[in-house]
Length: 134
Ligand SMILES: [Zn+2]
Image 1 (cartoon, rainbow, N blue to C red):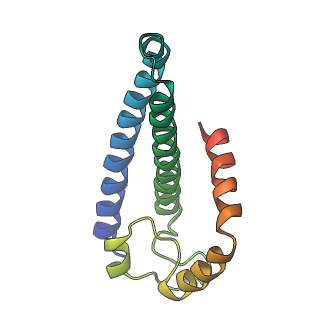
Image 2 (cartoon, helix red, strand yellow):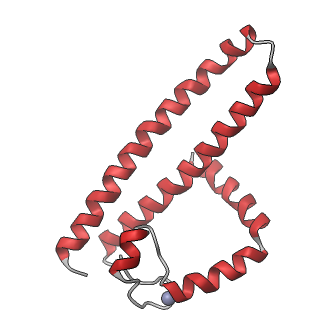
């Protein structure tokens, strides 16, 4: 991959990471306000629903952030743009659409087929990873 292209991706990941870290902080601050809100609000059910939604959002952000960190690592190590499974080029077209892609189209299709079978297990593991990460 050309140096210039690599730099463009690096800048993209860095700006995405900054935005995520910033929005993550905002979510945390809102979390800290929750107990006070709760004492004023009789409607616990809707508050719990909201908190659950925020936590899911936070979990997704944490996973996305992890992907970005991984991509930056791969850029630093010179592996960015190569499929982590077969080693082929992922292809610039695919990376433009999905910058955090680590697999070429062929390997990704194979992975998606097997993920579909274990989707509940994966979701559980993702939660565990988030706990460690945060
Ligand atoms: Zn591959």
